[in-house]
Length: 312
Ligand code: RIB
Ligand code: CA
Image (tube, rainbow, N blue to C red):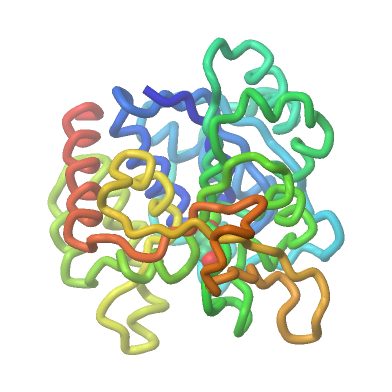
C-alpha cells in the first residue's frame, strides 16, 4: 500500500488518471488531491475535480495551490481541454469545497502527520511541488518518490523540445529535479507508447457511471487526434499512476536529467543524458521509456469496471 498525493490540473487525462488510482484503493491510498493552474485556471481545474467527485460520489480532500507559474505567465490550453478545462462531459453542480489549506500547506501537514513515506504523483505543472520542496526542504525525507508526467527524452509536444507540464513552469521543474528526491519521469515517449486506439474507447460506451464519464471525456479529448487523422491518442497522465501499480510493464533507464531554463528554442526542455556514462551519475532519475501497450490499456478498462461496480 502506497500513500499518495495527486497534484494535478484536471484536465481530461488528469481525471482519467485519478479514476485509475481510485480503482486501486488496496494498492494506492489517496491522501489528497492538490490542484495547480495549467490546462485551465486554478479555479476551473479545482471546480472540475470537485464536480467529478460529486458525480462519482467520492470526497477526497482537494486543496488549491498556485494560480500561476513561478516566472512564466499562465498559458491555459483551451484547444486541448476547452474553456472549462474539462469540456465534454455533463458535470453536476457541486456543494463540495476545497479544504481551505493551500496545497503546499496540505502537503506539509500530511507529511508531518504521516507515519510512512508518501509518494507524490504530479500530473500538471510542477509549481506546487517545486515550491513545496523549496519551502519545506526538511520534509524531503518523508517523500518516497515523485512520479511525474512531464518532459520528454527526445522531443516535446507544446514546443519542439518541451512538453507542456515542464514548459509551463521550468523553474518549478528544476526545483523538483534538483531536489535530490527520487524522481520517476513519464515523458511523452512512454505516454505515446501506451496510446489508446480510438476504436478501443468504444468498449466503455455502454458501461456504468465511471465508464460513461470516461467515454464522455474521450469524446472531447480524442477530437484532437481525429482532427489530425490519428488512429490513437495518449492519455498522458495515467502513465505514472499505472507505473506505481505495474512497473514491470515498463522499460526504464536511470538517467541524469537537467531542465533547460534558457535557450530561444528549448526553454522547458528536459535534457536527458542518454550517453550512458553510468559511473558519473550524481542524481539519476528513473526515466520511463516505453510500456506494454495492451497490458497498460487493460489496467484502464479493468479500473473502469471496478469503479462501475463500486459506484453502481
Ligand atoms: O503534456 C501533457 C500534459 O499536459 C498532461 O498533464 C495534460 O493534462 C496537460 O496538462
Ligand atoms: Ca495534467
